[in-house]
Image 1: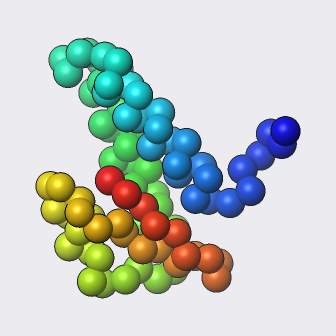
Image 2: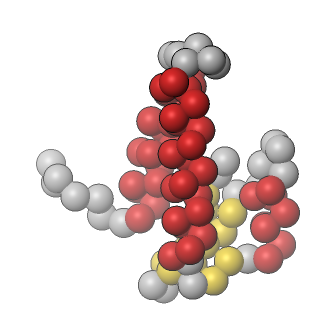
Length: 84
């Protein structure tokens, strides 16, 4: 088993799972729950900053409350879908 991620998408999937678990298994008012939200926002900002190309039709989905569509990000020739 490798100690490194093969691509950015694998890392993002793991981070999203961690944030979701923190919210699922902790009270809404807990510091862990709040930290998960803060870190997830920081991750999304970093993903956006590092992206070379983002599909404008999916920008609205990123901002919508229900995030019905994934955000499509292309960086270094690879396209990733980021779900919120």
